[in-house]
Length: 387
Image 1 (tube, rainbow, N blue to C red):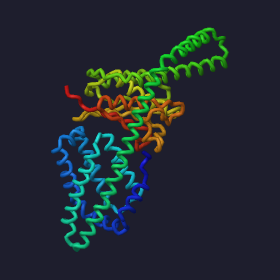
Image 2: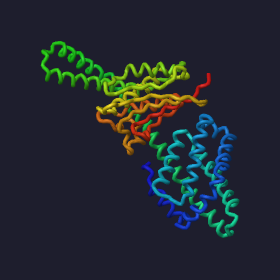
Image 3: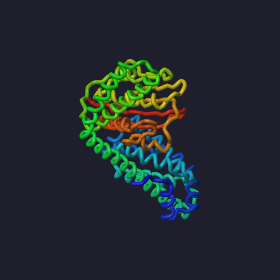
């Protein structure tokens, strides 16, 4: 399924006959709705709490509170009368978030109906000075807009879900390929490594020769890392959960990542940061990949910095790995976790795909974004696992 663009909204507006008059009416409705935002939001989430299937999607009150803020912002944008790039980008993000949190599309219809009912009622209560014809026209404009809103969210949901399924299929295919050729490649690579060691041992000290031998060693190491990542795809090992001290794990990762002198690694996890039930080896690999990616992304940036921070709440823990580099190109943000996609020169495109798979096997999520102050930001959320 192709990427969803603003032309979809424009096509839908034309199809349902959405006119400039509708946008003007919705702009007038906006101030009438503002006093009712809290009520609509509270009724919306009260309905979710009453439904076990819907409430299980949320990881606790903290996440629900965050989504309440999103819903209020959505209503403000919906009734602004402006339906251009910014409005569409927000709608698209909502559809992508629905995939991330695992919201089945059947709940999207019910959720929109809850909002629709609340908005119609708020207009009837707030537009007391309007004529019956004006209120009737307002209700028509509301329905037209919300139908388009729902269609965009559903289309984005399908596009995002399809992209993730394709990524999973590519991982499986890569795993099959790795299983058949990975071990065969390791044998000639081991011969090269042994021969290289002998050449280095008998080097005459010629600077040019040593420089080329160093380049060969770098490429042998890179090939070994690629083969290791491919074999990891092939294994897809089941989790061996144990109580894992995240601070100790992060300290171990920081001690293992090759760290140029110009890059500062900063760990901001309190000593009493809660342990999690996790496969410590796989979780270590995830954190190692994220920190190493940050170091690599900095290149030769002066005063480069990679920071790992953590927060805990009633639903689980959140680990953030951030660098102060150039960030992720906007057109790459939705693709960074796809197998074989890389925005880094010399990258292979397997590390982040493995990271996301490890996160999802733990029942968590891994997201990529650019920090407001610059640099790439990866956030890992792991749910609390009841003992």
